[in-house]
Length: 59
Image (cartoon, rainbow, N blue to C red; front, side, top):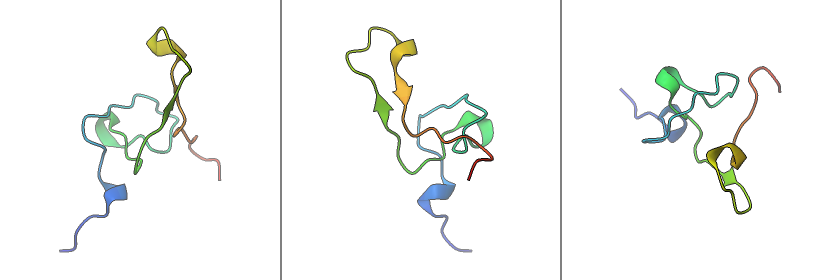
């Protein structure tokens, strides 16, 4: 039995409900190796943007 690589493990405590993102794994866990959130002085969660988002099915 080999060790799983980091890309096969979810980022702890990071929930993702964006089904169209390639990094959304089982049980809505983020499977990206890291995440980047972008926003310039946000005043609400809706203003933030996950720069790690990659759409499924587009190469």
